[in-house]
Amino acid sequence: MKPVILDVDTGVDDACALLLAARHPDLDLKAVTCVGGNVGIDDVVRNTLTVLEAAGRPDVPVARGAAVPLIQPVHAARHVHGEDGLGDLDWPRSTRSPDPRHAVELLRDVLRDAAATGELVTLVPLAPMTNIALLLRTYPDAARGLREIVFMGGAAGIGNATAAAEFNIWSDPGAAAIVLAAVRELEIPTTMYGLDVFHDVVVTLDQARALSGSQSAELAGQLIIKRSERYQSDGAGIGDGGAVCAVIDPAGLTTQEYPVRVELSGEWSRGRTIVDTRPAIDVAHDPRAPAATVRVATAVDGKRYAELWLATVS
Ligand code: BDR
Ligand code: CA
Image 1 (spheres, protein in one colour):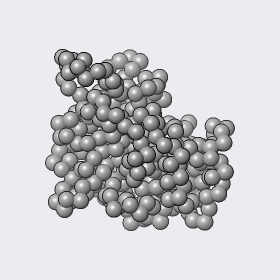
Image 2 (cartoon, helix red, strand yellow):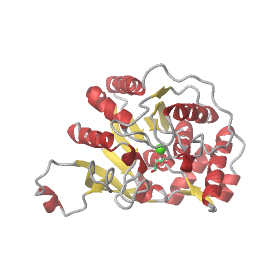
Image 3 (cartoon, rainbow, N blue to C red):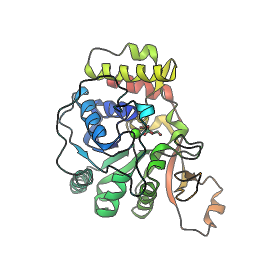
């Protein structure tokens, strides 16, 4: 089993990822850490506990993390995820309390244990990277417990929060820049599962309607149905779930290594991931500080990942 930690801002997309990570037999979900993003941190924590309960995994530790980005104010996306962040399904809310540790402390503890035992963890940030930046700056030794990072965020092409920037990176560009600097300094293998592939893993309405027989299946089905209704389409993407599919089945994802930077200052481009696709010789002669080298997802086998998700959540 692959040990994994998810860092989430649950969020319908994150709920799809949590259901998959909590139930897939090849993954050992060690912890889930929460950060303000799609909705405020209190809603994120409650939604995360609720989804894990539906998945039959109340044993997974969940910790509350940063409520706001490092510098700028938080901008929720309730227009995408509903007032409660979970599609306003009226799904019964968990009453479980989170772990008493701060998310950064839970990440530190799990990763230090992993470094000690050699069972290295795949960290899957699916949200603004505030917690991860705080972790890597405060306890850089914890990175020794990491096998790799597979994050949802960024885009080589167009953004969504703005024309230039994807929501997770745009929400806390400073944090993303710190994480990429740490990736370079600490040589952490990293994959960017960005908007270039994010929308390509789609479950049809018929497939969603057929999901039944367990709480996990029913929640998964309702999330897809609600999202399809919202966008008046006959199916919906599994969102952040695709990044978890990439951990389980990396062969379904096509990646290419590129230097990646985060734009921190542009009036219209702040939060954009600059994916440097120039020829290597031009990159080598760039006089500025070197960038992190990241495996950027350029294509995905959407059908294969949708089937993996459906088979697991049901
Ligand atoms: C990202 O934005 C959020 O709404 C999703 O949860 C995902 O992480 C895509 O931009
Ligand atoms: Ca998310």
